[in-house]
Length: 168
Image (cartoon, rainbow, N blue to C red; front, side):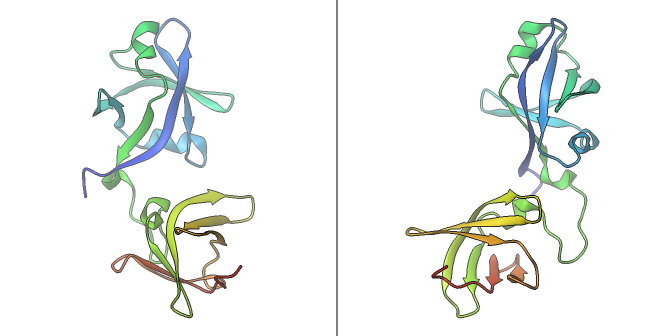
């Protein structure tokens, strides 16, 4: 789907009087977001492309200046906007590696055939990522450890097979 957008960061606030904005990147490392062009932000319910003029690392943020945004008042229109790219801008992954976006909403079933719920989101921890699975009654936090807990991911059937006790 070429029109599917993937969120990679957020514009937090304006910086200075020349149209700069502070960008919080969700990529790792944070400068990886700069490898994807163009960026899109939702303005008045429409995804609008932005062209980067210049950037610099500014503490935990990136300081970014865009073409056609040269004054503080213009940049304030971008404040709080999420930064996205089209999903087809992402590089292909090797077999058995997945983008988080591909795992969201997949149905999670354990080895006994019990449906645990759907992947609502993922969480990064220091040692491994965690799948956050929800159903109407319960939430499961399953470490994303292939071969140990995550036995199989099938994007065609939209299902993840896990070795997980539904009572845990």
